[in-house]
Amino acid sequence: MNYSLFEIIKKIYLKEDISDIGNIDTSLCLTISKYLSYDLDNLPFLKKIVLYIFNISANNYLYLLWMGIPKKSKVPFLRKIDKIEPKKDELYKEIQSVLEWSQRELDFNKGILDRVISKNRKFWEKELGV
View 1 (cartoon, one colour):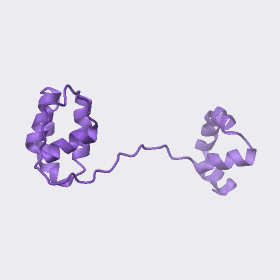
View 2: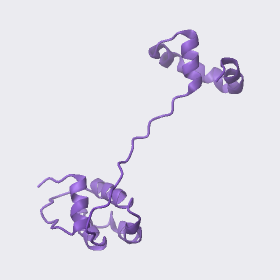
View 3: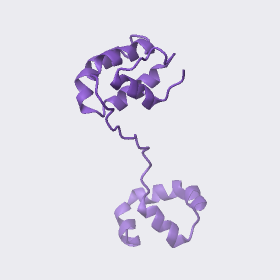
View 4: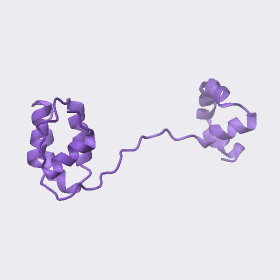
C-alpha cells in the first residue's frame, strides 16, 4: 500500500504495524528523519540511528526508526519545511521603477547592472534612496 510521509510518521509514533508500507527509498528515509528531528525528544535516538541510513536497506532503516523512537499517545505537531525564496534586492526594484522597465527588461539587463553596481554599491543606494 502507498502511504504518505505523515502517515508513516504517525505509524512510527503510535507503533502501528509498518509491514504493509512496501518498498521505500533512501530519500524518503532522509525526509522522515528530518521531520522526526523537529521533535526534540527524538534527537538522542536519531543521533544513533541516522548513522545506519546508507548501510542498511531503506525498509530496515524504517524498522530501526520504528524500534528506536519512543511511543507517544499523540503525534506532535511537525511544522512544514518552508521553501526558501531568494530575497529580492530593493536596489533593482528602484532601478526598475526609475527607468520604467518591465521585469523582462530588468532580467535582460541584470548582468550589466550587476557589474555597474558591484563597483560602488553604496553610491547607487544613496543616489536612488534605498
